[in-house]
Length: 191
Image 1 (cartoon, rainbow, N blue to C red):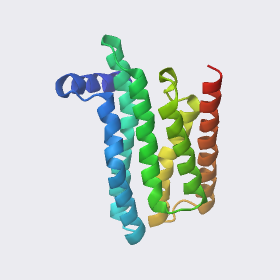
Image 2 (image 1 turned 90 degrees about the vertical axis):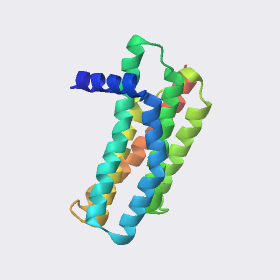
Image 3 (image 1 turned 90 degrees about the horizontal axis):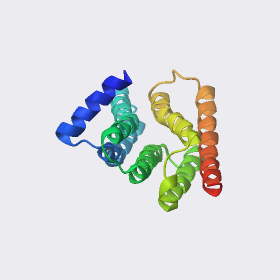
């Protein structure tokens, strides 16, 4: 399956010059629009708009997975700037998560995650080039954050997920986010 995705992405790259950076920019430029859709859902609690937003969000967030596959595929045949691309990838993820959390208001969980993501942005911008790639803890954190947004949207329009599960997931996401900060700091200090 991954090989088929890689072949398709290489076709897009060769024919239309869709690069990993363009896939990262998709996340950056769609972040405010997703935030507006989430704000509209919060004010109107429209189930149809919630489903459309979740589908769009999942398509947009999938570019995070696809840009990595494409970058590795391009690297097999030609030189690719992993350091710049890795930083752009990390920044685009953070921008998307921050923007999509803002409509949920200022509360302890949004503040905690946005603060942590802001610290990680600082680390991504000011770390040496060879340390701009995501750590394993950062990837785990991103997976948890990725599914947090659809869970919160579903919780708004319907109560199919028990609140205790939502709260437990939020706590796990916050813990993983701060472990990611620690892993980046530890990674930077020991290299």
